[in-house]
Image 1 (cartoon, rainbow over the protein chains, first blue to last red):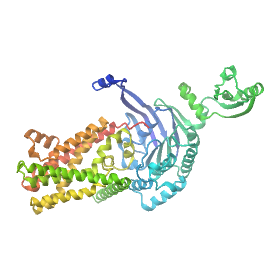
Image 2 (image 1 turned 180 degrees about the vertical axis):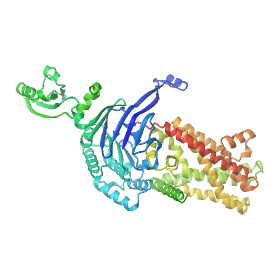
Image 3 (image 1 turned 180 degrees about the horizontal axis):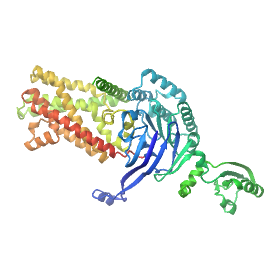
Image 4 (image 1 turned 90 degrees about the vertical axis):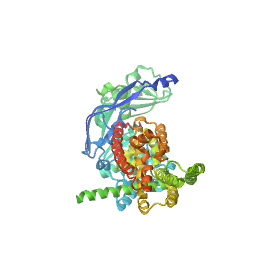
Length: 328
Length: 271
C-alpha cells in the first residue's frame, strides 16, 4: 500500500535576526539554512492496516503525510503509494486517497457542508444514487444529520470535524490520512470521532495512517506505531511492544491522606510524578519489584487509595522523547 | 481513436460538471452577503460609466486619436471592458487569493482533488454578481458595433475575438500569478497584473514603436484588444489576430513549465 525507501525532505529557510536594520540587511543578503524535516525514512504499510505516526511537534509527521499524498515532492528517496508515485499526482491516485487535517478545512466556510459535498460529488464523479446513500450512511454513523445544512462557519469544532470526515470519505478512498483529527475537541467529541473511525475501519478495512497528539487516539485505534524523532524513524512496531519499550514496568498510583516529602530517596528511584500538593504520586515500577515496593509503601505511608496499571503509552512516549537514546 | 475520443469527451464533461459546481457554490456563498453582491454590481457600473465618459470628454476636444474616431475608440474600449468584465467574473478573484492559497497551505486540498490543480486554482472562484454586468458590457459592444457599422463577418467573429482576447489575458495572468510560488507574497505581483491590464486598455497605436513592440511580442498584452478590433474593422489586417493565436499557444507552453516548477517548489504550510 505504502512503500518508502530513503525518503528525505529538505527545507530551505533563512534566519533573520530581529530588528529594523536586520530586516533592511535581509533585503540584500540572507543566510539560508537547509534542514531535513524527514531523513532517510523507510517504511512499508500493508493494506487494511491502521498505523499511528507519533512524534513531538516538528518531528516530520505532517511532512511525511504530505509526501505520501503527493502534496509536496520528496527531495530524495523512493516512494510508492497504491502503486503510484505520489509526486506525479496521477488522477487515479488522487481518486483513491483522502486527507483530513484537524487544523485546516477543505470545506467552504460560507456555505453549508451539504453544498460542499455536492461539489465533491462532481470532483469524484460519484453517481447520484451512490452519493445519497453514502451521505445518509455517514451522517447516520456520525450523527451529523442535523447540521449538514448549516453554514460551516457556524458549526462547532466537533461538528466541523464530523463533516470534514464525511467529506473525506464520500468517495470511499482506499487510503486515508488523518492528521490530528481530534485536535482541539472536547473529550466527548474526541471519543465520538475515535468510535466512528474504529467502526469505519472494522466495516471497510480501509488503510488508515493517523497522527495525533492524543495518546488515547493512538491507543484506541492503532495496532502499529511508528515513532518519528527529528525526521528519523525511532520505532516501528506493534503498540504492545512500544508499551514495553522501557522494560516490563507498571504504573502505580498512590493517594495519601497528607502531604509527603518528595525528596525521600524511595521516590527518586522510581521516576515519581507528583501532583501539585504532594498528596498523590505515580511510580514506574519494574514488575519483579511491584509486590515488595507496594507492601513497603502501604506499610510506612498513610495511603488511602492505590491502583496499578500497565505503563501508559503517553508516559512511554514522554520518556522516549526526553531520552531518545532509549530506542537506539 | 474512438476510445481516445470517448476518453476526451468524458474528461471535458467531468471538467464542465466541476465548473458548474464551482459556479453553484460561489453563487450560494455570494448570496450569503447580499449587500456586498449588490455593491459589486454598482461599482462595476460606475467603472463603465467613468471609462466611457472619459473617452467622450477627450473627443470633445479632438476629432481623431491616431486613425480612430470617437465611435471606433468607444467600440475598442467596449470590447476591452467586456473582456475585462469576463475576466473579473470568471478568473480575477483567483489571482487575488492565490498568494494566500499558497501561504496558508490551502493549495494542499486543491492538489488532492482528482482534477487539474491549475484548473482548480485559477477557476475555482467566480463572481456571480458580475454576470449582470457582462450583459451590460455586451450591450455597449453591440451599440458601438452598430455605430461603427461592423459587417456581417465582423458580427459573426466578434464573440470569438472577445473569447481569444480573454484567453490571452487570463493565460498571461496565470503565468504571472504562478510566480507567487517563488515570491509567496502576492501584492506586488497583483499590482503588476493590474498595471499591465491598464496598458492593454488602450489601442496599440498610441504607444511608441519600441514600447509597442515590447508589449506586443515580449509581453503580448496589446494583442488582447488591439488584434481582434483591428481585424474586425479591417479584415485585411489579420496578422495581429494570428499573433494573438500564436501568443496564446506560447503562453500556455510557458505556463505549463512555470506551473510545474512552482508545484515542485511548493512546501505547503505547517499544520
